[in-house]
Length: 120
Length: 110
Image 1 (cartoon, chains in turn blue, yellow):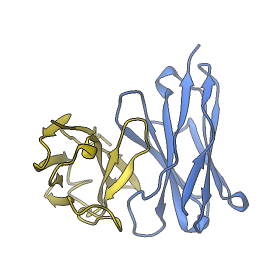
Image 2 (image 1 turned 90 degrees about the horizontal axis):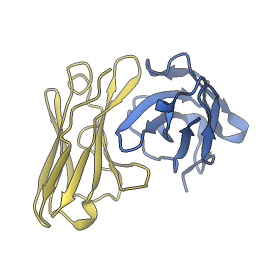
Image 3 (image 1 turned 90 degrees about the vertical axis):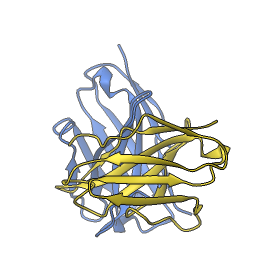
Image 4 (image 1 turned 135 degrees about the vertical axis):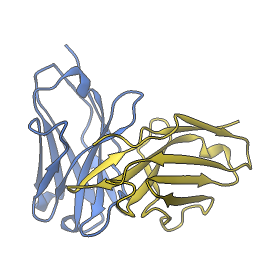
């Protein structure tokens, strides 16, 4: 069945970088986009951007533009999110989720989430 | 892009109906029929419950329904069950191939 499986929790110091992976199972990986969404403790969901798993095109939210990079490894059905220059405000659970490429604008399957803690 | 506006909390008794609003602008909610809703239980990932304003994923309960009027989308839960107690988030497609979420609504079943 369809699954998105994310890498494990990370603890980083301010100014460091973090790279989170999201591996897709049970579907045609390159027919979908993978989006990243984060949720700070006790806060709402925040859309961070997406990567077209087919051609690698990316779109980032204005808030993280310049600090975040999405990449993909299509043979491994895996996408990666890397955030640089981490700040305490980046402490959150990060989710990957997917949407079908084309005129489809919703997220039907989600990863289990990866907790990233930024602390000195 | 500013977050969509949702009430912080809504409550109801078992069997009652409740409605959660999601207020956006003509650039997001009002501009596209691309509003989706997600249910999130504590410590769990969000789960899609409504897409394209009114559509339910296959096999999902018909007690959940969605609608939209102008810049406001709504989620109605009919016949409240205790397991409906969760946080609910609306989400809209927005210009430039971006998306925006609402602030979330905590639903309490009294």
